[in-house]
Image (cartoon, one colour):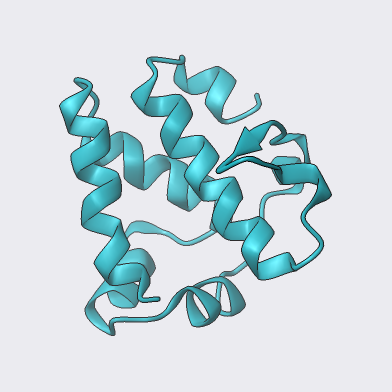
Length: 108
């Protein structure tokens, strides 16, 4: 699955709930270590999720604090690292759409 095809859906989900593209980008950059230019480069290259996470500068050290259920599965119990990383991102976007404060979403 292409990250670049899911990215606009993340933005749509956030904007429907009164949040912004900038907040979505902040979350993605916080999780992956990409800066804005590198994130845009991944989108322009139409990277799939495997490449997107493999080339990420560094997964945030606090990513393991992202817990809960997404799509019926406990994030912390997912054994496949790539699936877990995608679900981390899904969970963060869900929290944004539910109106959670950015400080809490970014586990700071």
